[in-house]
Every structure is written in structure tokens, then in C-alpha cells.
Length: 317
Length: 307
Image (cartoon, rainbow over all chains, first blue to last red; front, side, top):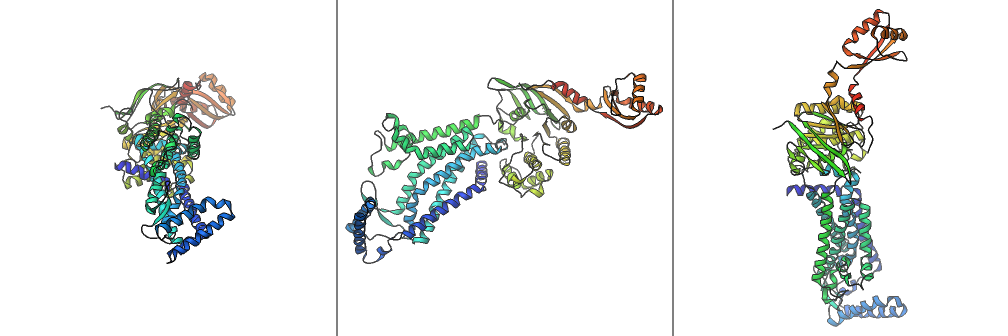
């Protein structure tokens, strides 16, 4: 056990000592900062709701939005949604909270695709790079089974995803707090939940929102890891994984007519399709079905990685 | 218990339907330096890869201190330290970080042992430099340090003097001898340079097209004085000496630029010199080449073709 711990320590050290890893975090930080600066400059972040006359403020805002809609067709969708939300606040007599760190974190949920991208890059390189550097030979001639070395590398990929996720959460919160302030310990907002508007906890939304996206992240990282172990080439692994991540939904749509389309990985990676009583994209799918399909894919990815890594000769480059 | 540190038993390797290694059987004893030579493509590196478990054996077995690399991998490989082909390290880490990385993979390696291994290869001053900036010779030293960390019983070095300067080569050679003699380590050195191997090995195995064509103790050939050695002499006047040697000794002498080359018994050389001097031939230089091993090597692999 301590042995595995040492191996993971080695892998993490090798990963984080490289310049490219540091650059990844700098890029993430800059993106988060950029979003905050842009949001801040747009203004209208709801400080005025804090006042006693928040009802009038909301009504005034609705009027402005309606006016804007009449002038410009393009704003129709966005403004209607905002007016509906404002009306919900008024009808339920709930004072809206101003914008703050928690909501900023919630909105940065989209950054998880960047985290996925970075995790794919790491997963694609962690085995293939040892082959490229030639260090795989010195790594394998130790009294440690190849299975254990592969496991330590896979765990390192998951740890990288976790650390990066935590970085996004914490850094977003700090930046959000600096730019917009903190809107309380457990703020609630009105959000469109698919089956209508609801007054929900932001923290709850953060957990479920990020959680659902993590499924896709882990699957794609495992896929890249598998390609990396099978082909021993990080370029192929990065290319394939990113292509599939981007094109996944199109692939599902393209084959949607076929009866087997529900078995496509990407038809199942978005588990939020079952949340709040939504109906699934394709007939015959349920939460249980999707989880089963995901587990089968996951097991196949890991099995292939293991087979190729442990059984194949390490021959000359 | 036998004295064999490593045993190869009918080791075969087939890739596709091509037989790369065709049944190698030999053993290396404790405290012995074994030279593994052969032309490029003979299968040296493939054999070494099988010895350390990087490649699977198609047939046969490799035993290290009696433990099979196939069935008792962890225990067998615990006793092996190796450099396979080039000593590749993580270029973005320093020498010290690289060594620490490998030290963490085997339990029981103390800080003192790490220092000791670094000291052996004389790399103390470059430890905090990134390996990417190392010369090939420095990486070779780091590779040897890495292979020694866990005090292996068998040390396998693939072309260990590659990239070292003459002083470095001498140092490594002396160190390999010391390891074998004082710590009873079996050292396997592969090389395509015969002279290199000859200087540090006790025994040499010649590999050709995946077969071991000969094993020979190094000392046998150099102390064996019954054989004729190749002698070359720088003399003046050369024509007169040539005539004398041909007439009185009935030798086959090759004359080239004032130097005569012929086969002669090493022990009888002083006698020859006296004879020439008494006939007023000036001798500037006499050299005896210890080339029997080399000759033998070329006899064995001379017609080598990569199949």
C-alpha cells in the first residue's frame, strides 16, 4: 500500500514539475479572471435589489426589458426569460439576492469542459510520454508489477482532475468574492429547471451541475488514457478524445434513428437528462440503463488499457 | 546452490514468424564481468530486454539467483540493476530528482545509499542541474547510479561507455572491476567494441544472428603464448632486415613504410632482436598486438548478415 502511495507521489511530482502543467493553471486562472472582468463591466448585477424598494426596481427592469425587446428582435429569448424570473420573484414575494461569489461559481460550470480538456491532455500523456522519453524502460525494471504502475498513473489522472476542479471552484469563488462580494452563506435564486421556474439553493445547483459534468470528464479522461496505453502515442489520444468530446452529441443525433443509438457512449454521458422528471432523448433509456452502459464502457476502457500495458513487449523505439 | 547469478536457459524470442533469438543458454557467475558482444542487429538488446522482463520470452527461462523472471518476476527483478540502451531520464527534472524518483520505487533505499551511488559515479556537482542539460556521459553516469541504488546482484549495462570521454571510460571500467571483485556482483556489459570489452571482462560471449557462437575467457587468449602473435617492427635499413628474416628464419614478412609485420612467438622476440642488432639493424620500435581475440571475433562474425 505504501508502495502504491510512493508511485502516485512519483507520478504527481513528474506531472506538476513540468512547465506545461503550470501553464494549464495559469490559463484557467486567466479565463476565470477574464469572465469576472467582463461580467463586472456589463454592470446591472443587482445591487439595487438590496434596497427596500426592490419590487419597484424589478418592475422598472421589466419595463426596460420589454422596451428593449421591441427595439431589437435578437433580445427576445433572453429578455423573456429574465422577465419571467422577475415576475416569479414578485408573485412569490421573494427579495432577490444580489450577484456574488456563489452565483459566479455556479455560472463557471461551463469551465468544466476546459478542465475536461486539460485532464484529457494529462491522461493522454501519462503513459505515452514515458514511451516517448524512453523512461518506460527504467520505470518497468523495478520490483513492481505493471498493473500497479498503470494503476498509479490512472489514479494520478483522477487526482489531477480533482485538483483542477477544486482549483476552479476555489479560485472562482475568491475572484467572485473580490469582484461581486459574497451573497450569504447559502443563497437561493430562481432558476429554470426544465419543468418551470423554481427557487433553489445555489450551492445545491453547483454540486449537481458540476457533478453531472464530471461523468463526462471521467469517461473522456479514461478514454484518452486507454488510447494512450494502447497506441503509446499522446497525439492520437488527445486528438481522438477531444474530437469525440466535441462531436459526441452530433454523433448521437446522426444515429438517433437507429435502434442501437442508445448504446452510444455519448447518448448516456449526460445524466442530467433524467433530472427533474425530464424525458430522455431516445426511447427506452432510463437512469439505470445509462449508468449500466457507462459502467460497461468504463470497464472496457480500463480493461483494454490494462491488457495492452501489461501484456505487450517494450521494444525499441 | 550454484554460483550462477544469472542463468539463461534455452531463451528464444520470435517476433511475427521471425526467430530473433534462437535458443540462448549460458550463465554468468557471481563476481564475474561478462562481455556480451556482437554486431548491430545480432540480438544483444533483445536479449537484455528479456533478461529484465521488458520483453516476454517466447520459450525458455531466465533465472536470477534461481528465481524465474517469468514466474517470480518481482523477486527476480529486485536483484537486477540495468541500463537498457540509452540512459534516458526525465529531462525536466534534476539529477537528484531523477534518482529520488527511482529510489522511491524500491523499499529500503536510504539517503546514505543514494549519496553513495552518486559518489560512485562522481556526479555530486551536477545533481541540481536539469537532466535535459546533461551530456550523454553525465546521463550515462546517472544511469549507472540509478542501477546501483538497490545493491543488485546482477548489473546489466548496455553500452556503458557510450558517450564517455577516455578518462570516464577508465573510471567506469575500474569501477565495474571493483564491483565484481569486492561486492561479488555479476556484471553483464554489452558492446560492439571488442577492445572495450576485452579490457574489463573476464569472459566474453559472442552473439551472432540470435545465436551464441562462442564464449571465451579473456585471459585464455592473452596468456596463451604458444600461439603466434602479430609482431611489427620499425627497423632501418628495412630491406636488409627483411632479407635476414626471410633467409635465416624463413618467415612471411610484410614490408610497409619501413616497418615489418610478421607472425612470431612472443617469447622468442628478444632472441630475434639480438639477432637483428648483431647484424647492425637499428630497431626503433617493436610492438606485439594481442589481436588473437579480435581475429577470432572477426572469424566468428565476419560473414554476419542481418537476416
